[in-house]
Length: 312
Image (cartoon, rainbow, N blue to C red; front, side):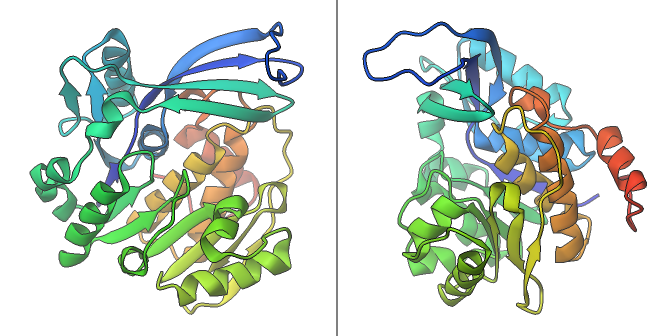
């Protein structure tokens, strides 16, 4: 099976549910506290591992108790961590997540994630070059992500960018990007146009293609997503009808599943179909890594809906 390398962040997610979001200066009572592995990079890598993909994680952990727990979780979900570095004297990344009515608000502290630098990328260039897919986000320094994409493109590796948290991105960076996956807020920021509905998103796709990416996907929550296929046809894929209890990690699972599909030679339409199934299952459970679906859970949906493929 072709290899996918995920370059990105890994955090310990500390989540708590509440009936309302607190106002400034207000203390409220919460419930259902839990700690799980998170960070966009780790979530995407674990998604691929749980689907049965061949995935390696490039990132940095602190030498604290959280770091040990996080590395153990990656390994338990079939993620190769031989290229994951432990930074002495540093804490691992942390995310504080408040969940209310299936919505969330998140504050992160980078910790060891900030040590994913250009030098780090250079030290692990062979891992990137030996992959079919390189998937990354922007919770680690964007200069390092760009350096990794430059290395990938020099060796014919397909690059997928999930630009979150969103930053201004130069055209030369976007020109290194084979596929970009972003939500409507991120798409609005990057294109400079409002993305409030399906028609807006369709125009947003054309704007992203004009900016230099080869394929683009804009996720729209309960409206599904808009994407461009291999022929640059722009297509709307409706969302699956599920009851969401926690949207944390939904976008990450979508990205991970999309990368898994491309590594297994799915066409874009089937890759979007799989990503939609995986993300829809993710939102039906609370948490981050613990909510990401297994291969068997996904195959049950595939069989139920009579699709033309099945995860092996």
